[in-house]
Amino acid sequence: MGVEVAVEGLSKSFGRQAIWRDVTLTLPAGEVSVLLGPSGTGKSVFLKCLIGLLRPERGSVVIDGVDLCACAERDMYEIRKLFGVLFQDGALFGSMSIFDNVAFPLREHTRKSETEIRQIVMSKMDMVGMLGAEHKLPGEISGGMRKRAGLARALVLDPQIILCDEPDSGLDPVRTAYLSQLLIDLNAQIDATILIVTHNINVARTVPDNLGMLFRKELVMFGPREVLLTSDEPVVAQFLNGRRIGPIGMSEEKDSATMAAELAHQAAGHGDGSGHEDVRGIVPQLEPTPGLPARQAVRRRRARVLQILDTLPESARHGIMAELSLEDYERYQDWRRRTTGMAMPQPMPQPMARRPLPPQPGPAQQRPPQPGPVHPNQTTPLPPARRPRPWRRDDQGGRG
Ligand SMILES: Nc1ncnc2c1ncn2[C@@H]1O[C@H](COP(=O)(O)OP(=O)(O)OP(=O)(O)O)[C@@H](O)[C@H]1O
Image 1 (tube, rainbow, N blue to C red):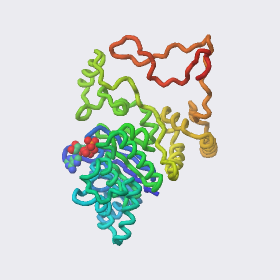
Image 2: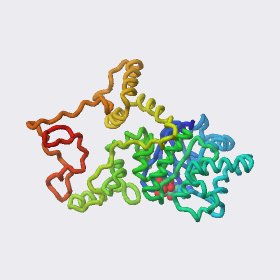
Image 3: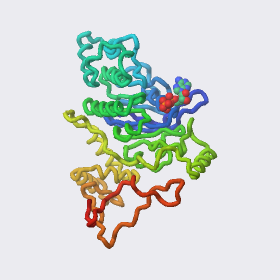
């Protein structure tokens, strides 16, 4: 199983340029986490600090009881062996075949025979769907294949922690979807702790157990995916929806005058091209490909998240409870009664299967038209066509 990575009060700057301050988060063992953030907020720098390639000025990164920020070089070397890193561009040696690239860490860091190395390389190539490409040069394969080759190389030393720096960069949406599935399948197979840095909203919504965001030189939030996906923080809403209007600017944070000018443009009818759709909300998480083992992290995470449920915002609580099976829900109730003797938090979130059906309006109590999003050019709301509707009426007033 993967190991936990506990980051406490980490701060990093280059000269007088502060990158981020006081970052505290824990990557739970064996779970998949995603770190979002606008360009230049220091996500790659964060990954490099985790693996000890960069030294933060303050704080600690504790793995297996060793603080990477304060340990001896020898301990650092041992801890680094726990990591597999997929760099942004795959970081393959252009003059070496894919086979030799993937074999490189084994030849550098182990005394395995060439027969053993061949066996390991081919099994990792198989894992990432690259069998048959081992004799090619990196320049002879596509960007998506280079990523997968980079992932195979990250796997050869059987890492317990996998760091992926923008695994989707340069990939089309379909290849990105395949890569997302590959990461979830890998997690199911080897139960490693995985941290993915990305800008890709689809990856952020569907892949991780935990989700966080860097902005304004700080960690805006980090925790169960349901928290960020249902957050009302303006910066989160802007980022998830890919909008120009909001606190994130072209280079970094906007000043208040720019924000006011943009809002005035918007009010005058100049849209930012993002439409009215709001992609926030919880969508189902990717599951391993049928035939692979179930992800052990799911069970562990459920137990962990239920223990902190009361501390989470209400919208996230509802999302988490809605995903529970009836059995887990009952188990949670029992556990809660036994350990705290307390009633459930109010308002009481219900699992999807137990929620009372919404009232069925009869002919005399038809629902009034729901307010929809207001277009800046309009004074009346648009029809609610894009809004999710909890129910649908047919001509007889029954439920659809
Ligand atoms: N070795 C270095 N020396 C000096 N400054 C650096 C170094 N590495 C990174 N930086 C600076 O740190 C800041 C954050 O860079 P980083 O690459 O971590 O951002 P990022 O969030 O990963 O961006 P992107 O999403 O565009 O990849 C940048 O301003 C960059 O110039």
